[in-house]
Structure formats: C-alpha cells, structure tokens
Length: 155
Image: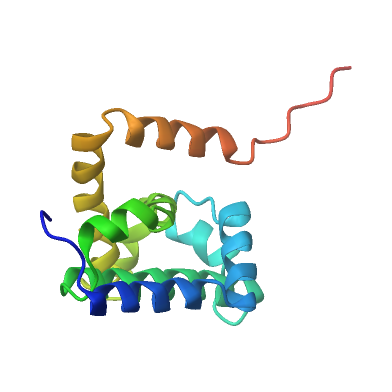
C-alpha cells in the first residue's frame, strides 16, 4: 500500500494487538511455538487433539491469526502497518502449512485458514521486496528452533 493508515485502521490495529496481549492467548502462543511442530495431520491430532489443552491452545492461536488476517484481507487493517508490526502470523503459518492440504481434505473445508494463507503469501512477496532473504533466514531460524530428536547415548 502506498497510503498511510487511516485513523480507524490504526485504532483497529491497536485493538487487535491488545487482544494478542490477553494472558490466556499469550500462554497459548508460547505453547504453540514450543510444541506445534508437525509434518502430518496425525502429528497435529496427537500434539493438539480436540478437547486437550494443546488442542485448545492451537485453536486459539490459529483462530486469532485467522481472524486478524481476515480483517487484513478485507482491507480493514492497513497492509503495510500490519506487515511491519505483525510478523508472528507468518511464523504460525509456517508451522501449520505442512498439514493444511491434508486438513482441508479430511474435514472438507477448503477455507480452513485461507485468510492466513492469503496474507502469508502477500507478506512473503512484501518482505522480499523490502528485505530480500529475510523469509529464507526466518525459515532457517525456525528450523533450527525445532525440537531435535534425542540422539542415542554413546556406549
């Protein structure tokens, strides 16, 4: 966007940020980044099964960012302001991306996290124009932060 945010967009942006600070959502976000490392939908169901605390936390994080991205995609939030200050959604997207196609198919919901996906695609292009290589570096950092399998003890 080549325009400045409107007062209304800035106010909504601050409201979205304020919701992100809510204690339970903050706890869920911490849990999500520490634990939600999946390759298959079965991994996701094991780590964050419906009815478990992990499932609740994953749902809170995905639901929060899906709603924030919907506001962005409908033009209610200013794209530059959102992308400049809200990169966490992209990290969430990167963690859920491996299971999206399988989840959409299994639950017959082509729209599952579609707003986050659309925003992430735009963010990647937006960031590459401004800071080439940042997205690749972020992905590499996230890969290094993944829990590593325990190595066999030396005999």
